[in-house]
Structures are given as C-alpha cells and as structure tokens.
Image (cartoon, rainbow, N blue to C red; front, side, top):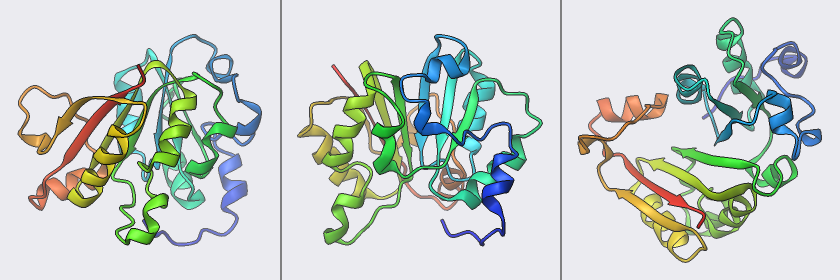
Length: 211
C-alpha cells in the first residue's frame, strides 16, 4: 500500500496516545503495559486499521496491538482513533522481521495476517509473511494453543502458505477456499477485503495453532 510522505510524521506519531514509541522495552512486559492479564492479539500489517479497531471495540476483554512498517499509515490510524477511548489497543512501527525483538516467548495469543503482500515472483518467496522463516518467529512469540489467522485474495499465495504451514510445527485446524460462502463464520472485514468482495473476488483463509 503506497501512501504519500507526511513531513514530520515521526513527531506527529509521538503525540498520539495510541502510539508506543519504546516498543523494544516492552518485550515480556506487554500485559503490564495494558495493566491486565487479558489475551493479546496482534495484526502484522494493519494498513488503515479498520479490522483491528473493529475488533478492539467489540472485544474489550482482549488487548490488541497493530503492527505497521509505514509511519504514514500508522499516523492515519492514530488520527482516526485518537478520541475512541480504547484502552485495549495500541500501535507500533516495526517490520515483521523484528517481532521477536518486541514480543517475548509465549507472550502472544493470536496473530492476524490479513492480505499481506503476495510477492508473486518466486525469488521473493522468503519475503512472504507466511514463509517458514516467519512461521518460526511466530512460533516463538505465540503461547501454546496460540493461533495464526491468515486471509488473502491470492490463490497462489494461499497455496504457498498452506504448503509452508503444513511443513511447519503448526497444526492447521481450518481451511476455507471461499470464506464468504461459509454460513456460520464470524468474520470482520478489512478495507481490502471489503473492496475485493465487492469486486466478486474469492477470499481464502486458514487458521493454524501451536500445539
């Protein structure tokens, strides 16, 4: 997702009550940060934030952390939610590669990967957030029984991701080849998902757990 450069965005972000600037000092301390022992769910690549903000509003007994490498996108999210009074949500600016420097072993209960960059060229396979190298990082930060929820509109990426997760230590519990044809599935839409569904695109999803 390309966004325009925002002059002074780093300082603007620091003024947001939802932005955590010292995230590297929070490793193994996130429950203390939220001042409770509730579950912690993270979204890697939160984009404009609709998905995670909706979850935070609907589930006040769960803590949510939005991760985004684009400071500009994070600032847009910060502006939208500044007056939301959500005590169970914060946002941080890191790359997915750095998650084990921010979250401790078993500190996270669920990871959301929504419409990640498909990196369609084969030589870019290791950049996909569902590649085995990333799965090993997720394994480290997830607690036993913790889950990965992955959604995409790319069948190629989905099939790649299924192959990667099946050869990992995770256990796949649910696979949906057409998520929106499932009658009894609770599903919060992202901005991309809403757009793709309106265009008639198929949405794919899997859920995998750490045994």
